[in-house]
Length: 299
Image (cartoon, rainbow, N blue to C red):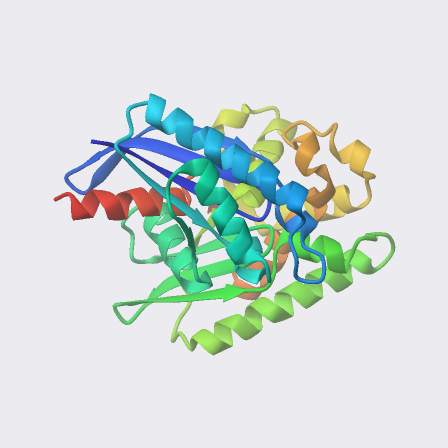
């Protein structure tokens, strides 16, 4: 059967439609719109305008999923909706425009779905998902999956560090690194994985930009190994640019230029905190995890 998963994140709304069955998925269509829900979160309240625009984008994806023959649609939201005092109001708007219930995922569930979607069945790889409002870590430890969600994302870091001149990039990286290290301590894992997979638009778009800067095609961003040194170089380069200058960097969309440097800072901070030389970028996300879960139930 055909099914779709639609995720409303802090920076973007995404859809994956796939043929599912026998515990596997065959992706058919991936769509993304930069809806920037988190950017409207002020004093814990989402703006009416941004809620409507984001819900409308999700509704459009639902319609496209139905037109593609999807019999089941799973709709969920993450950090921005989790944090919002008016999250219930947003859920009502989204459900009215989409015609399906909206799940607001707890951070640990978001991390679990990211691991399921991105690890590809591997048990020796860790996954980190740098979003707009949160960062999730997931790894196996003694046969059990350990997950944590941190209040740390590119849009959240932008709010805290709108100015990246002078020492601010270093200060932002050190603060992010400290928070990720603290999260690892709370997880209490005995040994961190040697291989890491980077999930989310922040890391994937940076991988595309890195390849283009090396004279390679952006399509090869899937599976591209972004070294810690490259992440550091991109964090420095993007921090020194204005938003308009970042928007002209090949691989960096104009709609994400304001958070591009903060995403690079977070990627470097994550790699440093995890003691990793780099991470493999993937376009697979919690959407893949959600559909894989649906596929397993169809077995």
